[in-house]
Image 1: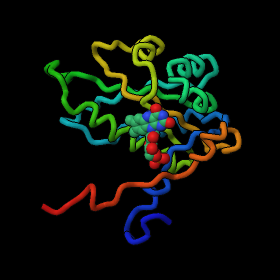
Image 2: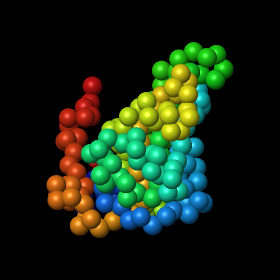
Image 3: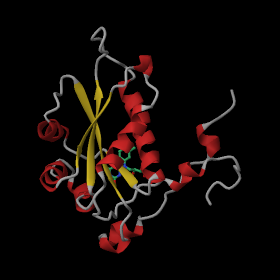
Length: 186
Ligand SMILES: Cc1cc2nc3c(=O)[nH]c(=O)nc-3n(C[C@H](O)[C@H](O)[C@H](O)COP(=O)(O)O)c2cc1C
């Protein structure tokens, strides 16, 4: 186990990692909704809940969503049974002013979703490598009101042998910079 010095650390944090090999087995609708339900309980500035998720789990829609990915992501993410485009609502609903925290809040919601996925035996791989303009097109989400942040590939982990050699090598949990580099007293 990684970070074994910290006995009270919840295993869910170190058990989560972002695979590229996915099984194509479809995900039941209730399980898909359970992922979004986990995200729904995330904290947000003024409880604005600015996260929005548009998903594809059917062949035609999946193909459309795959088409917005950069080639380096398309090559593996095309096997994932669920793709989710994540948006953050730009302005507060009450006064229409820019919500400076909406992307921060949406990131937190994505982590909740990723951890819930792991809890259910699924994995989630977040991608920033996508064409933002195409993301608005395929989802019909208006770019004036929402910022397209990332695409998530979700599914059961697959066989690393299904990946091109270069990616197969990377199919494992990754390292982290030391704790002393990210958290210091005073
Ligand atoms: C905002 C964001 C964008 C990312 N973009 C990509 C991407 O385009 N392609 C990719 O393969 N991984 C992408 N990743 C995954 C990261 O490379 C990965 O989370 C990081 O290397 C740590 O590995 P782990 O998630 O397995 O612990 C992205 C992650 C985040 C949070």
